[in-house]
Length: 96
Image (cartoon, rainbow, N blue to C red):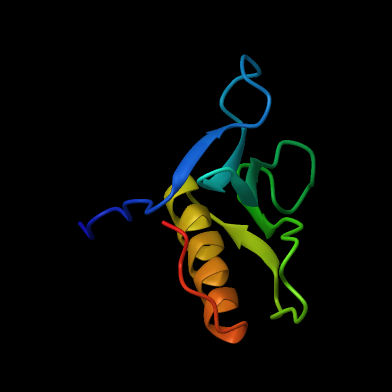
């Protein structure tokens, strides 16, 4: 069995107490992404939607900046990898 991805950043419930279905990623105080369990779309029920949220210093976007994964860990991986690519694109040092 492949090893599960271990998130590099802090993830916490976006809306605590609502069933562990919506998480936001943080680099210190900076929110950078979100993952949500889909329970309504016919073709995506049970999958995790990931997306990059508004980051004030981002001037150029990389697409796709959202998508779907089967697990929370893979959704976290996609958001974190995208976030780190934004650092590279903007010539910034990582904030961790």
